[in-house]
Amino acid sequence: MQMFKFLAVFLFLWVASAAAFADDHAQKSMADSLLVEKVWARETFKMAKAGAAYASFSNQSESPIVLVGASVEPEIATMVELHTTKMENGMMRMQELEEGVTIDANESVMFQPGGMHFMLMGLAGPLEAGKNFKLTLHFEDNSSRELTVDIRDMSNRSAN
Ligand SMILES: [Cu+2]
Image (cartoon, rainbow, N blue to C red; front, side, top):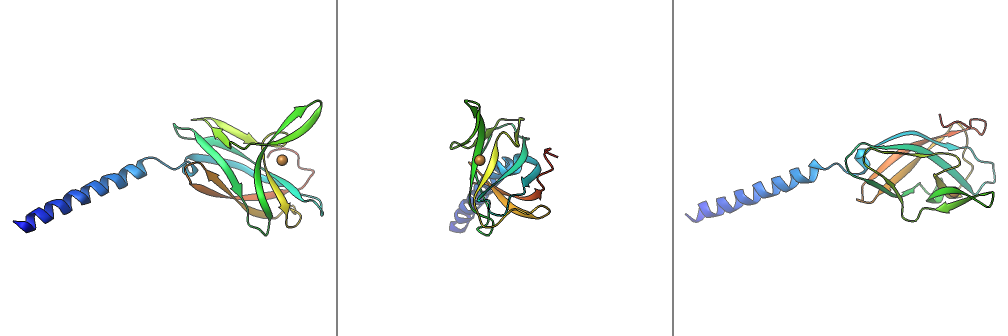
């Protein structure tokens, strides 16, 4: 009899944990719900201390995705900030997006020249056209996603 009780409790726990596990996986992480395209950076001059990277994002889920930050290896730059560009008194000014960037359900957001961008601060060396580097995106739900950023030459001004 004792053995049956034990078995019943064991089975209950097993089923409960299996259900919790399935629940966990029913909802995709923010990182997995995002379609990322056109990932690139502009080459920099030799002595540049900062660079910019761009990408376009499409949220393919029914809930908002919040990009809270990004990072690169120290061999590339010391830190990455999310920036936007605003016209102020006829001057283009960059501003940090401290709250991150929210991509609403089924919406797209473009990071592109003259607008939002990943600001690479403290470049370890110039970003050279033809090379690439890894950029990791960090999301509000603690998921992350690694991107390969292709470096393009200055003459290539289009987002493609
Ligand atoms: Cu910037």
